[in-house]
Amino acid sequence: RAKVAEETVAMLAPTAAKRQKRDQAAKDVAMRPIKLHDAINNVDDAIVITQAAPPYPITHVNAPWCEMCGYDAAEVEGKTCEFLQGPETDKALLADLMATVRRGEAASATVVNYDKAGKRFLNHLQMSPLLDDDGKVDMYIALLKEVEEEDFGAESATPVVFS
Image (cartoon, rainbow, N blue to C red):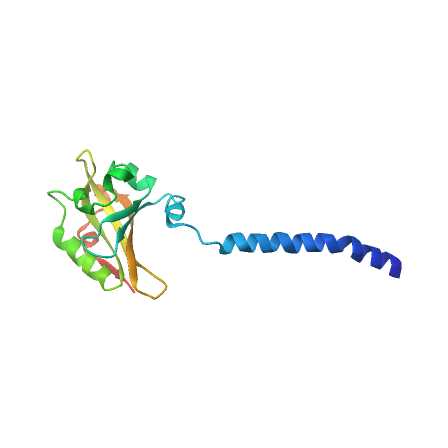
């Protein structure tokens, strides 16, 4: 029996070593930093990222954002999001939303925007500062979701602050 046990241990040792090596490789992949571009392009939500300093130029948009707004990334990078605003966009609401986010708080509101063709759409915007390793605001991220007209009410126009 001792010989069988030794042979079993000897036979399983390479398997255990392979398993340990495989598990370590999986951990290494899971802990590997991913690039921001890769992270935002692997989600279905429309995302826009801007610089932290005024006038908040766009640094990244993903394909769902381009589809929703009608612009290519190259057309908008370096510009502000003002081109999405139009006659029915509530500028005071946007100012309140940005003031909240500049205080380092996440916030959301539903706003009227316009796509490249000039078509009006309702956009539920969730904004948040992204912090660097020192806890300072490095950039802002916004997730956009188109809202149906019938789902839009007066209460949707008030910015909501998340604590």
